[in-house]
Amino acid sequence: MFTTFEAAKDWIESSIRFGDKLDLKRMELASKYLHHPEKQFKSIHVAGTNGKGSTTNYIKNIIKRHGYKVGIYTSPYVVKFNERIGINDAFILDDEIIEYANRIHDICEIILERHQEHVTFFEILTLMAFCYFADQAVDYAVIEVGLGGLLDATNIIIPEVSVITNISYDHMKQLGNTLESIAMNKLGIVKPGIPLVTTEKNPLLVPQFQATCRERNAAYQLADYDQASLVSLGETTTFTYRDHIFTIQLPGLHQIKNAVLAIDTFLCLAEKKNIAWDWRMITLGLQETTWPGRFEIFNHQIILDGAHNVGGIESLKTTIEALYPTKRKIGLFCMMKDKEHEKIIPLLDPLFDEFHFTQIDYKRSATAQELALESQHPQKFTHESIAQALDVCTNLKENDILIITGSLYFVSDIRPLLIKKYRA
Image (cartoon, rainbow, N blue to C red; front, side, top):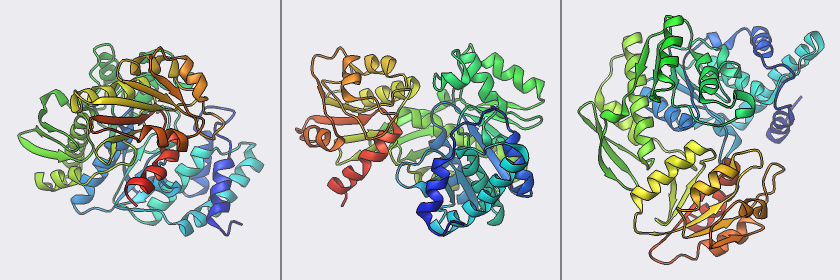
């Protein structure tokens, strides 16, 4: 029986990360014992390699602005454990996490005893979210896929709309080494008769998307971000789409794509569920969306971004080059050992005038020295701690910008130091 938040959190985080078998059996068993909470609310399901979190938040805020009570489930967290699960603008409370951890712990014990199956970390979190949304009687919940799609713990839902942001290389150990195999896994969220909205327009993948939708009698809709026109790009971004002007707080050209996808997803939902809507509420929903650690700007000179795969880094590069063409660029980088740092570091070498490497106190973190060895940069430096790295890298001149990137774990560790220094 958990009586404290820390005890409940420790139990969740100490649970095994992946089950012996990659299937949905444990989720189906647990949801049955919990009286199928996932069937007690309507949902939107969001998969993709990059942009899932931003798109999920945009969709949540647009629906909320139309007067609905909206749950949101995202991963991983950047600031606080609770931010994985929320309703409207509030995260789940510590006491509620204790309550659901106790309930789900008992179910996990039953499943282990009766079926010899260990319920995993992400399955526990997903069950917690589903129970919370059911108990709170949300009108809709926007559910972000954790990994892949087909066998992801979230994939026991039958949503109103399925969403896929894009397909890029990430988690190849679990999803396969080709874009087609990754796409097939993510297309596993497409349910019979449920529309799919996507911004993926890679000509190698579009036929695969269309064929999957035909097989499942699911309407296929491309949210064509090329129809959006840039008005201004800066610490906020303004663009036009469908003859309306939108401003978003999340900087970057890639965020226009995510916002367009959110707009078209909502319009698809509104048509299906006969929701009365207006452009002003869509505009406000997009405008009020923020997302810690996603091109987050401190003191006008420091950019914190959790890009952690090739696609994310390419989007970050494009935005940096568009926003700061004449600035002197300093990079501070940390990445996990099991990520594609050997591909990402050569992409970043030509972007930076100085390249700094550091490490975090986490078993999966590569060392600063390991990362620096993969760089051919003539001005590269290593720092054994993020505090030491920040001391050096934040000594900026007027024409300098600092870009901090490489891992959401890194972002989570370094962000409190930036908050203390620049926003306290």
